[in-house]
Amino acid sequence: MTPLSRKFLGDRIRDLRTERELSQEDIARALGIHRQSVSLLEQGERDLTATELDELARFFQVPYEEILGEPPRKLKEMKKDAKKELRFEPQKLRNLLLYILEKIGGRPNLGETVLYKQLYFCDFDHYEKTGKSITGLMYRRLQFGPVPQQSQFNSVVEDMLEHDEMKKFPQPYHGKQQIRYVALTEPDIRLLSSEERRTIDNVMGRLGHMNAVEIEEYVHGDVPWAATGHKGIIEYQLVHARVPPYAQQDEGTRSGVVEKAQFADLESALGPVTDDEYQYFAALPHLS
Image (cartoon, rainbow, N blue to C red; front, side):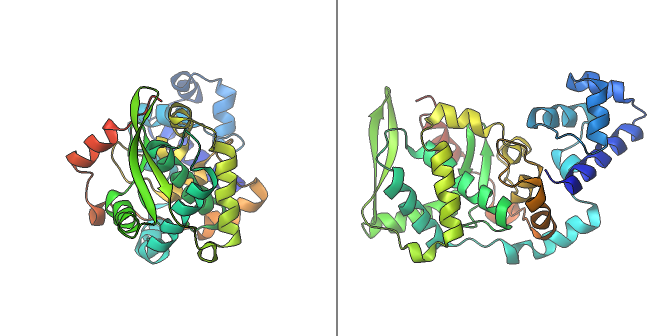
């Protein structure tokens, strides 16, 4: 977290505390930390963990965005231009899928649930570093992790299946039916910039060995997922509240991205997750 964003977060915590006439000791008891740690938070000299953010939101009885969000005027300006900045790019998703499958698709752990999280980290890590998502794909927060917006994801996958660019099939894995994807063609890497490929390679290198349980547990510590309500659209802007090991930028390079990055809450346009979609996600193996 940059010094600027830490300072803003510290000011928000102090304001919420003083509005309720609470002491730093009251906050410390609620979070299970020392009073000095609360003082460091309010001074912008300490990061707030995802668990502490959750406890703080419950204690203050406010949504996460009231703690993490930008000042109201700036937030409105950001939302006004967000759709221009965050655009779904089907060809980018097609080539990202093929690139991942070409590199690690043969590993037995890469079922559909793991693939979803690989896509999530590729998009959100790249947004944190550059202010832009690779694919513009939106993700929803379900209890077992982020899942891609199906109206976007399925349109690309179905087209790829129809044109024999990819194969999708069930396969037994640790006593469950795992949904797997296999690439039948090569990615057009010209459509992925060298910077995007570095992000993807970094994600695969860090997380490519994880099975469904391991990557599910890992993603639950990431602020964008943790700070989003159940079934809600995960806002890309939340990456700027990340702390290690999720944060991809050091403090000297992230501040510029925080100033220029945009985010969108497109839930009204995309619609809520349907019962059929939710049942499909719930039926996928999450314990393999």
